[in-house]
Image (cartoon, rainbow, N blue to C red; front, top):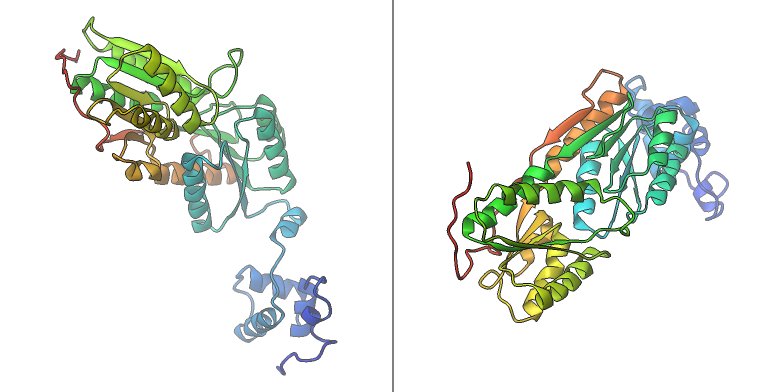
Length: 365
């Protein structure tokens, strides 16, 4: 095939504002639109010489398919929507990355949206996903909006939620056992000898709003661990400071230092722990000599704090593979399980140690 060299036959040079279309590729390669589509989708029923001719034209024109336009033109797509609560929080960013890798391994692209912990933005994100005709939605959020679920239920779009349970044939839930994870974290501190413990939270809403399910489960695990101890020497306080987690952790520590005496801090997540680190160190306290700190989520930041943070790990790879596997099962109507529980485990680093005045008290087994 002779090279494409003149202005008339080269749509890329006809005007920078004009997008090269699949029709241009078909015309210059002298094949049908279905043949170009077959090449783009990797179908095997295209002759090798024809495939190469189409690929040569695609390369010369610099053609890229409009994936979103294709999605709108079809009922079924190769696009999975991912909705997270906060892109600035490494926990959600790392989950989104793991989901994207897993989806691509199964031949799917992903589209990402965030809610900033606002239920109404969750609903708007679902509307956006449905407009793109995504094949499924991974709802990886801490907040839960009933209207968003109603949209997914009515549309019949397969969805998988993180932790939040919903009743619909095509909607599943992958849960991480945060309750037990927090239990193990507090147990670790108790076994070190800590009896004066501070729990630091950062609830998103006001007092009239129900707590996020993930926070509720963590606090339940915190309380269960304390109840396991046969000791009257426990001195436990909870400080709930709303807002951005790192800043909330800093403010909570500043308030707690003015009111309480404690030898260990349990942070509701790693970013809250980051703020707690700043507050403790700014007050001249050494971690863990004066105060031990435990986080939750095991984000990449933990290894780079000084000292590195002991935290509870959420299994990212298992979570991603479970979500995508469940979504694909719902897409194929294969009767796949609608709920899966993943274990959380503690990762011991250098931010925890026995208190200076260790108190011995046996755990109830």
